[in-house]
Image (cartoon, rainbow, N blue to C red; front, top):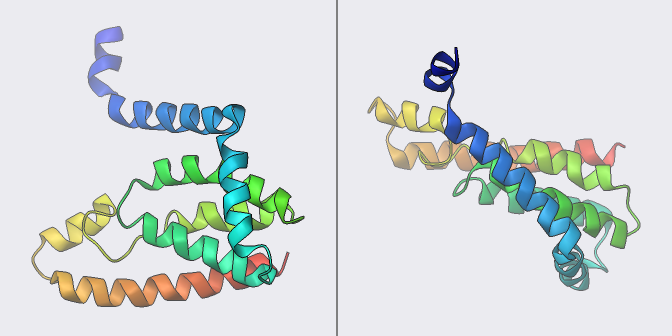
Length: 151
C-alpha cells in the first residue's frame, strides 16, 4: 500500500538525486557548463594533462569535505566533461576520476554520515581526524591521478 511505501521511503535522498540530475541537465542545456569550461581552460590550457587531472581531482576531493558528494558529482560532471572536450581529452579521463574523487571525503565530520558517526563516538578527536583525513585525501589525489593517466 502507498502508506507503507511513503513511510519506508527516504524522500530526502530521492529529492537530492532528482535535484542533482536536474541541475546537471540545466547546466548542460543552458550553456553554463561550456561557459565554466571555457573559464577553467583559460586558466589551465597550457598545463600538462596529468596536472589538469590532478587539479580537478584535488578540487573535487576538497569540495566534498564541505558539500554533498552526490550534489558535487552531479554539478561537476557536465562542467568537467566540457573541459575535457575543450582540452581535446576523452571526457572519461576527467569524469571517471571526478566521480571517484567525490567519494573521498575523510577530513571533516560533516563531510559524510560515516565521518560523523566516527567523530560522534568521541574516540577520534577532530584534529586527528583532519590530520589522518588530509593524508588520505592527498594519497587519493595521487592514486586517482595515476589511474586516470593509465587510460
